[in-house]
Amino acid sequence: MKIYFLLITIIASTLFSCSKEEGEGGRSSITGKIHLTDVTGGNQGDYYVPDYDVYILYGEDDDIYDDDTKTNYDGSFKFVNLREGAYRIFAYTRDAADPSGVKPVFTSIQISGEEDANVGTIEVQK
Image (cartoon, rainbow, N blue to C red):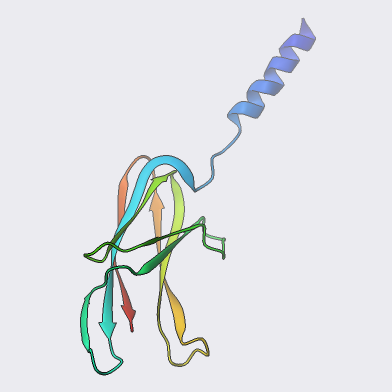
């Protein structure tokens, strides 16, 4: 009888002690917009840019992106089916000082519970 109680206690504690990490599998979403300022010359202007790459990192310590999406016709983007936790969203912007010519622009957000979180507008340059 004691062995059964011990076994059930171990199994129960294992099942209930698992904490879900950030990532897919939830009912939350993160939305935002990408606003581009064109400083390259001929086609100067600023607008919400369509078909622009946006990336998401699950957690605060990850350095490799977990998912990506493209902006809609109005510059908006959405990441869906997320669990609660910390997330970082980024897009690349022009940076003449960097050898690659670009650098990431990060914004962080915390999701708690089921919600539709909005990171607002991410400013980038072309």
